[in-house]
Image (cartoon, rainbow, N blue to C red; front, top):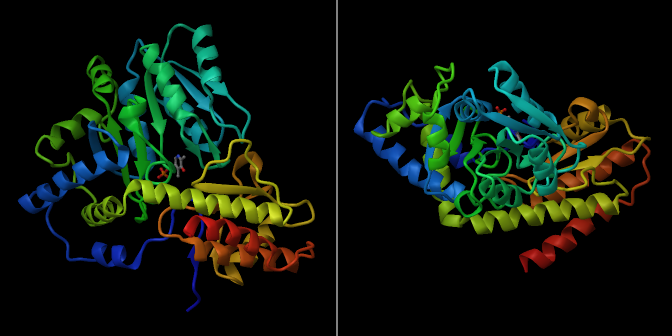
Length: 380
Ligand SMILES: *Cc1c(COP(=O)(O)O)cnc(C)c1O
């Protein structure tokens, strides 16, 4: 059997002990055992999001939790500003359109993160805007938005801020309460190193006031139903019990390791990967690079599809390509979850072989050495 290392920015590699935990015998969710576990998970999720707010666990991928938060926070009479700077950001505008939510898209050049000035200008131009939706780490372009700054602005103006933190939470600094974010979202298959299938949403008291002030047509992903069940640490529908068990296991180890240590390692892996790209003459794509995933522009002389096929088939590294307009133009490497400096050095070595195989001029070891130099000082 050939070893496959998953470097895609979701799903990511799942540790062996987590797989074994998930494989434990099935148990029923309407039991004291389940509620005890759900209660502990709630406290651990509060640590993960750095919040005292209520944290909900949805059966469904990250998008289910994001849809629930957007729909719940935007009842009739409110207007949302949706920052569109990549493929995932576009999805949240689609949610607004689908549910008939009054919204204005704010298009920002791909590769750039959302900045305070962009948001404040858009809010100045349309005083009806009282809700802002941004993606913290836009995985499709590997760009970082200034959530801390934007949260300060939305707080000052009394607006609600909804943040897609699907590749931010558990990877890069996220401080929901300190910054003043109203709804933060993540999913199981990115930094949480679990299989896909759970979405998580932390909802502030301010957001609950908004949610309770109106009514939206929603049933399965209804925040209010989830809140009611949480009173007894239950779930409104049958939860994904094995993944809930896995969440319990993973979050305990995250807390033991500390978020600060995880954020530092993710930042180190990103820095080393960017240094490797530069040493190989590949440009880092985004203007505002995020640390949870790195996107590199593929040189004109290199076939991107063939590159990824070789990386996977010949060398056992599955990486991601570009989406939408970036298809065929970039490659992306994840730094989230169960991945370390030595996996990353291996990925850079495989990238060198692959580029060389396509006739691109490479000095073998140049990218590896650049990454190693970064890791050496960080791991010292
Ligand atoms: C992966 C991802 C999503 C989609 O999450 P699903 O779990 O596939 O629903 C949304 N936003 C960002 C930033 C992502 O990286």
